[in-house]
Amino acid sequence: MKCRAGFVFSNDYLTYHFHDEHPFNQKRILLTKELLESNDTLNINDLISPRMATDEELALFHDHDYIEAVKRAGRGKLSEEQGYEYGLGTEDTPIFPNMHEASSYLVGGTLKAVDEVLSGKRDHVLNLGGGLHHGFQRKAAGFCIYNDSAVAIKYIRKKYNLRVLYIDTDAHHGDGVQWAFYDDPHVCTFSIHETGRYLFPGTGNVNERGIKEGHGYAFNLPIDAFTQDESFLNVYETALKEIADFFKPEIIITQNGADAHSFDPLSHLCGTMNIYERIPQLAHEMAHQYCDGRWIATGGGGYDMWRVVPRAWGQIWNIMKTNTPAKGALPNEWLVKWQTESPVNLPNFWHDTAEAYVNIPRKAEITEKNDQLLQNLLKYTKTIK
Amino acid sequence: MLVEDIMKTEVTTLPPTASIADALILLQENRLRHLPIVDQENHVIGIVSDRDVRDASPSIFLKDASSSELENEIHTIMSTPVITIHPMDFVEEVAAIFYDKEIACLPVVSSNQLVGIVTEKDMLYTLIQLTGTHVQSSLIEVKVPHRPGILPEVAAIFGKRKTNIVSVLIYPYKNDSNYKILVFRIQTLNPTPVIQDLREAGYQLLWPNNIVEPRR
Image (cartoon, rainbow over all chains, first blue to last red; front, side, top):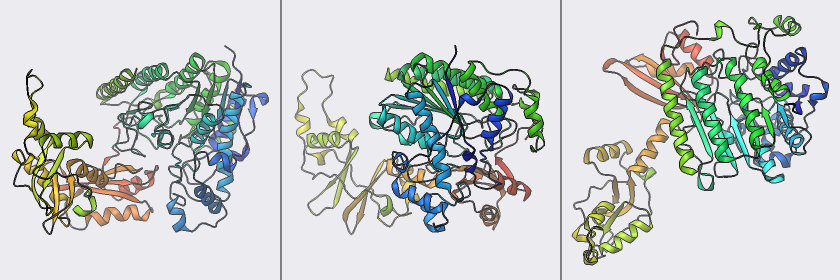
């Protein structure tokens, strides 16, 4: 299968930068792009420039006064007190110069991806600058200012009237997107994440199912802390296929946070590169089975930006473009260039080696618990059918 | 927190002379489970639950059941006397009443007048607010010696990092009265700096806990 794929990128993405100590660092996108260029899977014809989302587009999801507050914050004209109401100026989402423009680029990139796919120019488009799933209608949270996926889904609904399946594999619950479409039966949200019992944002229980007309169109798999590859993939694959078969989407948007890896400092899941090869393969398969290929993928979380994110995100592109994950050694050119800057030893292979595999004493218990969770979820899909 | 902060002030009631059928319809139409019975002076003189009303209705298994039972006046089946509470009572006292008396609804009475109602569901909703689980947050559990001054000591570490605390709960530590568990919900996706500070200050964290091997 040869697919027409596109990669949205601009150096402007790097301006979405809170401060040097902040764990959310968009340099991850540049690292991924260069890894793919060195690997000869990404070339100039694949690249698409993002645009800036207009205020009207942002207002498809966000409140006008929130957008104005973000603009003022970026110009240093929002007081601490005023910012607090909008979640601006907190430890998670500190104010930085021109934050409105930087955030609008990420949203515009996802909108550009939508247009490329829905105009029929490309089958799949990847916008690693997007995936900011914690953004709320009038509140910044969890490193996210504007919620590009929520805006893009509103945009698809309004402009193209398609049934959208949103799949969120970030280790944190995709709460902003879920609540945005909680009462909408035309948008199905599915989030797999570490249980919110301990982890931010705390929501994403299996019983969160949607309300009113949208009841039965929100799905959550809050898997146990320390879940590893086999259990993750088993529950994820079964649930995804069941949900896709039930919902029959016309377009798929995936949020590809890469923080469920055992190296990630902000979650307690213990996945390896195996899940980051399989997740895009499944999205690709579902897109062709149900949506004539229409698939937009975004980035998201991922806080081991050297060892995990470039490879995990690189595989999304490899699968979009060539239908197969890259194997073997990472290109030497890339390793040589970035090892000088990286505080940790860069991995030598696309796959993980022994140090990524941890020994979890409670493995059997965790697997059993996740299986029961899956049964709980499937019970619901079957009642609806 | 006071009862007046959580009570519902619009209460559906019936006079004692209303029929059981009236009660049945009112319960079904408004999806209620309890009806206070009040006299003309708005004094609470009894209460009926949906179960009381069902028990007084003819069985659906009886072929020739007449529905004459439904014409009986409601005061014939109401429970009395009624346990009531005051708007200035504490919510936690009310929880104890629900638990001890095995009931699920309490009329709120002030100056002998019915002024509100609190149900088991209102109570649970309030408890959820107290735990803070409805707000975006990360959770940290610290095991501490049970001694004066420990809470501000630990809380100061959060303050130093400008981390906003959404809720604090203090649990007993198993059956050991020498220790307590402090549960903090903090409003951040990135608790790692605070976790590091707590560990460096020598506190024992129950969550996040360490994987024994090979790392973390």
